[in-house]
Image (cartoon, rainbow, N blue to C red):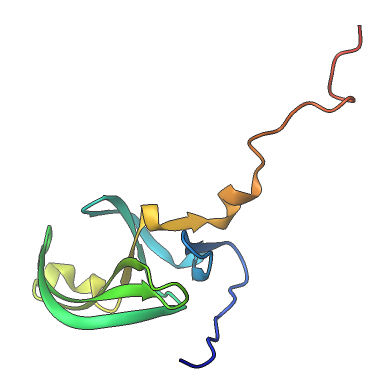
Length: 127
């Protein structure tokens, strides 16, 4: 198969939920108000560490589009899709953009917080 080279992103990044490979910077989010079959999705201007599926015509909520499915290049999991061509002029802003399904990605910032915090001896009240 060959050696896999991954791009490491600097800054706040979204990662693959399954293998934790970097996918996109938080600064590249264009919209957090997209929908997919399984819930919310985010529109990105740029993503990395992906492979693209074949182009196909797909009827979506906003009309007919030519899209390519997006897969993590590290673990192969389906992540979302890329808009190749849109047929409605009002949807042209989507062309060349990427949609990642929210449940398939993790935000590294939320992973840094320890939600299982317990008081240390200095936090406890002294009787």
